[in-house]
Length: 139
Image (cartoon, rainbow, N blue to C red; front, top):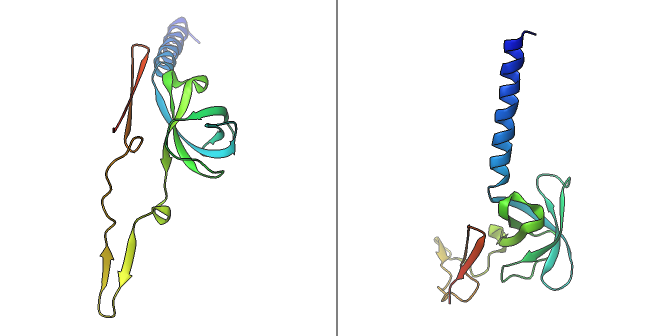
């Protein structure tokens, strides 16, 4: 290899390192599956796809009591597993409550679920900036 090729390769390596460092500073969201309930509102999770990586003792910030096998989104502040929390439970369409379908002899009609007033914990937004996490809920 010539010295110009070595210099180009070193420059590319430096750029890769800078990009990795910048990505490590960004928050991220991961799809996980509940593996076990720990104490109180804390759970052990596995990051999907696959069960290669697991998270231990992650705080649940939703209003749901999670069960083994449930799917959740986990928010990792600064992309660090040690600084993450469960922010959303994924409810499959077949488990959503309140949706009913009534069938008459002539046509099929859907009866919409009654609109309920939002309650604390229904709508949660998270914002992280300058080292401060702001959690906003409907009151």
